[in-house]
View 1 (cartoon, rainbow, N blue to C red):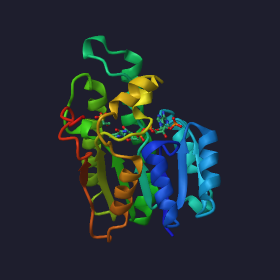
View 2: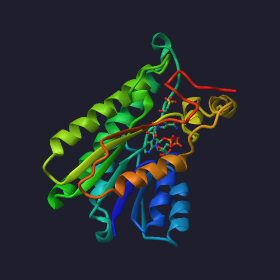
View 3: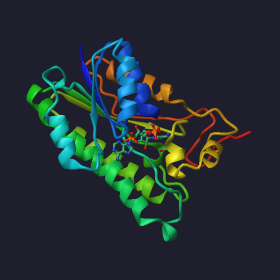
Length: 249
Ligand code: NDP
Ligand code: 8X3
């Protein structure tokens, strides 16, 4: 049975992906900072499959390398990496952007993804086998007003996704991005620093994507035959035409 490591498994897209993978019996390594949520998900999914949890902040490269590097034997051979941990912090014009927000987005969405990849890729190279799914965004395809640094972080994910695929070519490792549009998770609550009213308004007046929709797509991507690599997949709610055009009631 395949082993998958999912970052950002405590919420939203990562959590739904863990639940979807568990239905197929994939062995799971679930990562995040909120250990109580990891433990709860481990309890729930252990009925379906074997689950190991890893509690780290993706910004801490020493911890990332140490914890992924010392996985128990049963979980060591990682077949699938879902690089999902990430968030937007703030929605401000560049001239009034907050430096801590900029640091968080670049450190988590870009450097964190690199650190986790650095920890996982050597084993995949050794086995000449693996599949890496990088979660990008429509924000990595089109810049929108006040999206500036979040968009930059997701453009970087797009570039890293392409770079990984090029550099790992010939080593049996598939690399591809899934780029969601507006998806109803805790994303906007984090972006607006816990302001639930503001966060809910983002998804009002239309049917947003649900995290399960993205999980189904990630599951589809990783269950294609070996010769099929979905390199770059963008998905939006039907009501969304671009980052700025959304048909709201
Ligand atoms: P959520 O806020 O629901 O989930 C984010 C996850 O990332 C959480 O599990 C969180 O875990 C984890 N995370 C955040 N910061 C860190 C950190 N420093 N170290 C470790 N884990 C971290 O949002 P989504 O599910 O929507 O977001 C998942 C991915 O999807 C992100 O990369 C996001 O950019 C992307 N995306 C989201 C879209 C949307 O509209 N929702 C659209 C396009 C892309 P914890 O806090 O426990 O550490
Ligand atoms: C999340 C989608 O449009 O809120 O990446 O930036 S958006």
